[in-house]
Image (cartoon, rainbow, N blue to C red; front, side, top):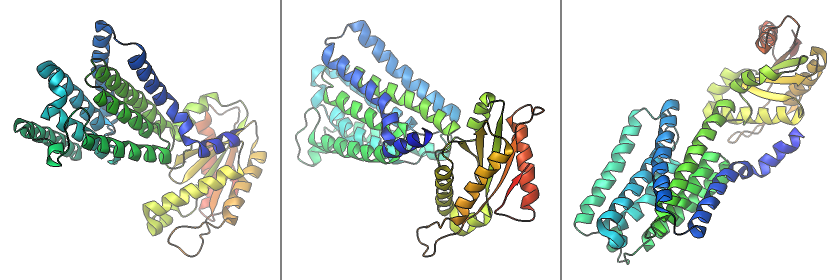
Length: 390
């Protein structure tokens, strides 16, 4: 059953991570088209919820020191504030104002920029440069708007509502977002695609009182939930292989059965391979070895607990039966030929393994794992590409 689910996830990576953002998007559309006009107190509640959600997302990202998608939220928030200020100051004429026209062009460009910037630490010098870039843009917009200059006027295009230049940039951004989230399948990429679509609708129907509030609030909610799910995913899942990682092993170990065995699989010569093939090459090697392990062992739970170490959980097994199954994995890896891009000859890779079973005296899974690791290290002093018992 697990093998079937893994295959389905390979072919349909977006199914699992699209459901929640799509549901929020559908609710926003239903609220906008089906419940107009909305009561004033409901609009005020949604207005406040937008800022609360954006603030909570930033706090979460600050705590985990991750930059994505803080700057997307910042750009959305600034755009939302500017739209509301223009509405109050200019009334219905805000649609044709230079400030609004320039904002509609800059918003998709900024969404596109921050979507493809690599994720990294939030509290660093690079984040200051990003902040400066945002504020320089708004200063430029203010300067151009005072002179009644718009980006669309520079190309001789009409300025009304969602102008042609902004429509082109939004379309390009959404196409790029869709391609990216289709390739990765990550919930954060999917959420950024849907939030970009919601920003587009908020801009397109900006003249309607409820539209910016509904769609920008939906975008903030989508990103907030996606941030939480993304952080949970990267905390308990290895991003390179997609396997559960050490934190998952510790969490799941509380529910291990009374009888089980653990197998350790160690990639031989990992440091030498890292030096020879570099970070990109060793990542490819680890993914290929992972594929070989999961293809050979379809029933047991596999964890990646270190950069060169995998742990396999055999429920209801003793160390003798676990030894046989781990030995099959070792032989499957040793007999395979791995093709690495840029190298004409296929690579021959090996792993060394050890197994240990749960004893009555063991207080937890850590003691079983330590015993298996000690047995592996003893064998590792003399030889590689071998399986041993603890």
